Length: 245
Image (cartoon, rainbow, N blue to C red; front, side):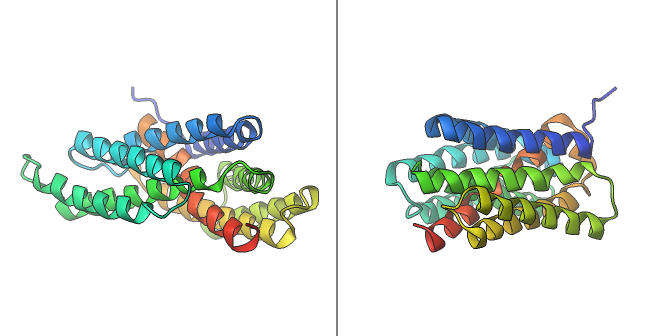
């Protein structure tokens, strides 16, 4: 019998992954980035299974290579200036990969769109690398991590879609604002915006990914669990740069 992972377990995995990333960041930024890179590779492995795409291997290899290129581009440049080039080349590579398939190319458009969506998630995850390890940056990372953990934990509560979305957004926002109280370097406005963004993305992804029949399979469930952690990288970076640094 195939082992299935339910929404509650995915919520726990997502919260633990987020909390681990934020906690490790306070001790070692390099170690935290290594954890994020590992999470992104887990996402790249499980994303094709989550969407039940044809030709798993090709999509997995493509997304893994994009992850390496995106993280390396931000690591060596120190900002997001080269991510646009990485994303553009990745989309071209996705087209080439689809044309190179030898299985008759069933569900071609769906496979290409899913690869593009995976590329967007990975490129956004690279935004974490650009945040940096200064005192203000680490407080933002901690605030985002705690708010996101609160938002993703709400997925373990069984409620109708709209009440669940409202609860997730409110919980993450409240926790974010609370972070502004305990971390005055961030401030209530920025911490509240970080919490709201984390909650909104958590609620949307929970509603979307829960509709896929394969979401309970192990690799797919892990991809769904780490997706919220990865995708908020660039939004958090933008809030940091606009308001604080």
